[in-house]
Image (cartoon, rainbow, N blue to C red; front, top):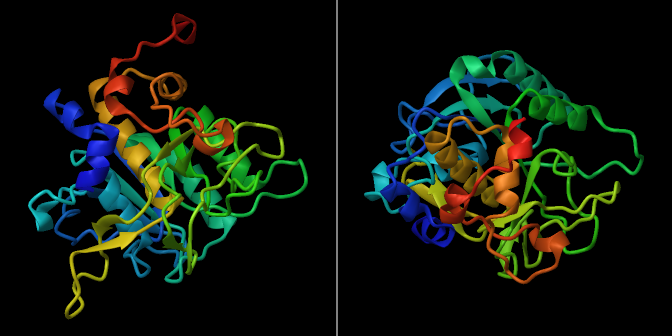
Length: 310
């Protein structure tokens, strides 16, 4: 995470005095371990849509890793593996089982709950580090409709581009939505383990079936070291490394939590517009890099088009 923070310009934002404080991030994933040293006291609400109870403990490890990237405090590493926005707090909604599998019904229910109750917990950002193969028919799926309802309700939705690349039109749902902020990996040229295999050039590419250019933005996703939900097991470490667009997505979500902690008045549309003009061009095709790699100092220095304020 030290490397990632440097790459996207987090230290400069910290020097401005912003750390994500007061910004709620809803993580739709496999749950979160609230007892991990880096995540203690950061979860304000949780629910398990798999077991239909409030035991949102993470029996997979994916969700805890995601939360650590977004806003872990780095307590167990003297700050080395601190997340992007350590001042933020979490609503952890468990929609994946211990194998990392889930169904769209659980995600849709979680999104509908957020639309009704998210503001009670100051949720501004929704992180969805998962995806399914896009349907071949043009009709919108219930999942796509739900993420767009959440966007229309004012939430910033960050969704993974998926690990089905490098072929064209390999963005996964709900990242195919033209409204949400779809995140790919900026460093997928590295050979890493994703989906059980060692691969490179895995990050989903656009365009979508509706001819929408995707992803919107990219961020580091290779060998990201973050919180390990299995840290209590004998011989286990407090951190573990994972790779994929699942890891790139919370880098962007954490960066946007930093932005909102300094500019709370921004709407989701304004945030997306600022992203579109502030990213670092990596010289890659539009349907591979989107606008480019997240660059937080430029994002903070951007101005909002006056037409969006009318």
